[in-house]
Image (cartoon, rainbow, N blue to C red; front, top):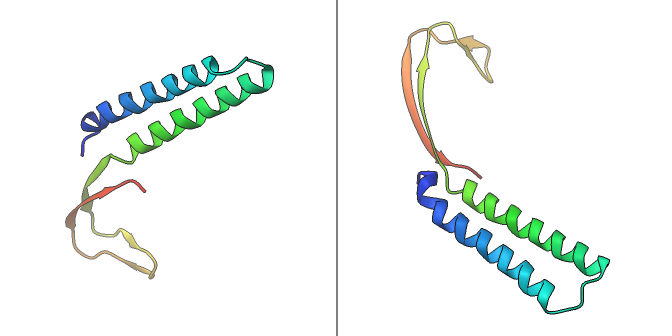
Length: 91
């Protein structure tokens, strides 16, 4: 899917992360240890939201193979031109 389609999910997860941090801060007296914990949890939640967003990307390629290109893993070169396409997701 195009990333624009995944944007509402990213926005929602970021909002949830901030609301969770706000609730964590309001439910207990804040000390340096609690503050560090809240920041760490918020960082993890934001990282997860961004990671989940990026995994929604649909990657497409259009390839042109010119004669004389090396072929890996065997020691050969292409003899004739060609084209190809590919579609996939990030993992």
